[in-house]
Image 1: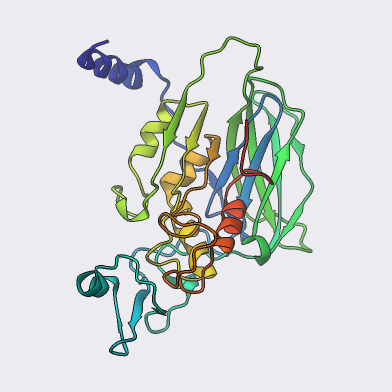
Image 2: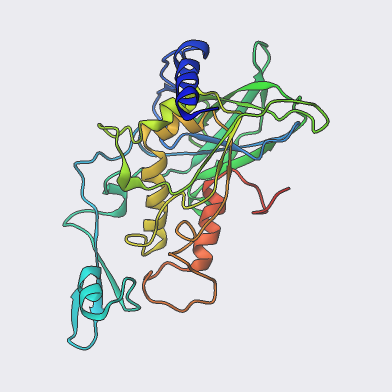
Length: 323
């Protein structure tokens, strides 16, 4: 097919053949705990799926009017602290292997930075049902705390192949009978391996927070158009976040995930599109890294911490590999 014909047919498909998604607010707000970083689903098989959610203290991220920290590196030869540009010019070092200092603006903590979505302890549960049916199945209430960045994930089993399921997540504080926030989503299971079936999926990489093009904190314009194509799933091939310049401690690493998945475009997309997340260098530790690398550039944050954080932030289960 020639390029012009392809573009024409693709545009006709989006504008004329695909159903228009009804604009709904996925949030039902109460008194908290909240779900400001959304729902993620993944590891879809014909009979299973993993669902993920995180309890948050706030209903939406800290706005763009807030500050971000400054990171400096020590030049021992002159006993001075400088940004990376200084070392690149003077020593031709893009990633100086030097002592790191993170400077927060006056009065700021990591929970008050731009895009921050601090977590909170509490309980959550997942409800699910075949689309068009009345009866919900539900998981037990699960407690979450800071050891998992206030997130929980669970494997749904005994699902039916090639079937769309509605999801709902409910939250509450421990010891209370009333729920806080609920959020709806959906997923579609895979067909059986022996079935002949068209599969529509997307692949992406390099999820750079600083490259947003949608104003007012929504994030990325492309997500609404991706969702209109109704993919069965997406494969994220890594660099989901970029720790290198600012992720110099474990709390700052968590902040990178909060600000990315607190964006409204991400919340609206991932709650309805199952994703297979792959881990790469920038969302593990730093560019082209490996476990044995002894480098001061990332400050207090370690390679091993990065591996653990990734497993807490995406629905992928105990193993980082699959067939």
